[in-house]
Structure formats: C-alpha cells, structure tokens
Length: 370
Image (cartoon, rainbow, N blue to C red; front, side, top):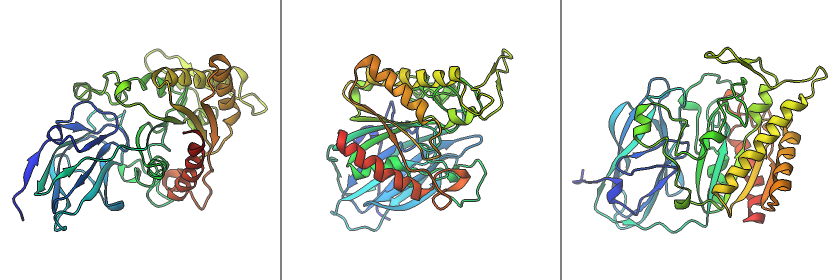
C-alpha cells in the first residue's frame, strides 16, 4: 500500500459537497443524496467516516466513472473505507458518494459525517459547473424508500432506501445538473399519512435540515437558516400530496400533549370533505409562495402520481390559486407514471423501473421550461 496523504474537505475546495450543509470539517450528510463529488487523478482514494444511530443505520452508495460500484451500511463510530485503489495514476477518475438513507426525524442519534479523504499521489481537479441546479422536495418517494429491495419486503430498514434507483438522481444526471433532496417518509403538505399535522415539510424548508432533531444535530447546524443565496436552483420539484391523500383514509391522530384530534375527512359518498380539501389546496398555495420567495427565478413544478393521483384535482386547485394570486407563469403541475405490479419496489413503494419511467416524463418536461 502506498503512503497516503490525509486532508479534510475544508482543505480540498475542488471536492463538491452535495446537499444542504454547513461546515466541511467534518461534512455532515443530513438529507437523502447528500455526499461528495470529485475528480481525482491518483491511484488510490479512501474516505474517513463517522456514523452513529439508535434505530436506523446510514447507508451510502459509491459511483466510479458513472458506474454504481459499491453500497454499504456505515459502522458506528469512526471508519475508513477504500473507494478505489490500484488504478492507473494520472488518469482522472470521477467519483460520487451519496447517502442513501433519509434524515431520520425519529432517531436523534442518526448521524453520518465525512471527516476527510486519504489519497495517494494525484491531483483533485476542479469540477465543471453544472448545467442546472435542481431541488426536490417530497416524501418517501423522494427519500428513495423501496427503490431497492425485493417486492415482498415490509420492514422499516435502512437497507431499503436508495439514492441511486431514484428519479431525482436520474433526472439530474440526464440534465447534467447538481441536485438536492429534502424529504421525509410519511410526511405531507398539511398532514402525515396518519393525520399528524406536525409532520409536514413546509415549516422546515427554510432550515438546513430542521427535521434532524436533538442537541447534536443542532450543534452541526441542522436548525440553522438555509443560505438560499449561496445555492439557487433552476427548478424546485415538489412531489408531495400522496400522504395527505392517505390521511383521508386514516384514523384521526390524537395529540399526546393536548388530546386534540386531527383528521382529513371524507364525505359519506367517499369524496374529500370540501373544507379539508381546501386545507390541502391552501397548503399547496402557501408552499409555492414560500418557494418563490426564496427562489425568485426557479421553475416551480409540482408532481404527483407515482403512487396514485386521486388528490391531483386538489393539488391543481392549489396551483391555480397560487397562480391567480401571484400572476406567476413559471409554475406547473405534472403527473408522473404510476407504479404498477411490475414496477412496484419494496415496502409497496415505486421500484427502480417506476423511478426510471418518472425520470423520462420529468426530464422531458424540464427541458421545455428550463
């Protein structure tokens, strides 16, 4: 083995930090698809990681020259992992490391950090500027839940999250874009799938990763305001509403502190209760208003359909309310292909083929508005 030089990411400005983050020494990987991207001409490269968790271990994927070459769970504590070795010196190697697992709101101990890189010879080359920047905001679909694993799998496990078999990754790559994901399984626009009104994405949109709770996550900057000026997307792609739709079919949620009950209701004929449908439509309008405030030039694209489109008319109403109130002509509603028995993945979620089909629709659409 060659003698290796060790550097923090703060010492390697050529290495691109992916996903919302604060400091680079260490680099805390909060969201799905956070990680690093680099070009390196040396023969050997290792990554120094630190991980912790109580219930959900972090998984990562490694791409080398565009090929998915490794996937593993990161052991608790400090670890050192070989990304590649024995490769021809002097030849540029493109590497991307992505966190597969989402931020874990229910596990304050969940943590994944890159402490540094160890390398033999060679040079880290500047990466070309991306053609576009894309931001994805969603639920379990955008967390890549079920995008890897056998169809019968039902366990809540880190192994069944994938940032690779993922419509955001595929769309960004097709458009030569840098991208970020903000997503939480089960969360919605105004309610979670089980009617919890606190598990909604909009209140956390302006923070780095406010869903990562606890003192340690706070110390690493999770609750800090996001610096929107430092990274402006060309498009914000929402994929929310599936869990709000599910809430209409779920039992009321009872607040353990106040005893108050919350529920999105249906009428006796099965239709959405008009007052509750209006809550969802108003939530769409308010989220679009916030996104436009923070991203003045971005296309705003609201997607639905990968797990059904029953709530599409309500989302469309919210979109039309927003456009009528704002006059914004750069906001759109887009239906994506629904998972079928053949394209369903693990945990009754879209599989890799469904993500690929969604990618084709979304990529073609973005080409018309970017």
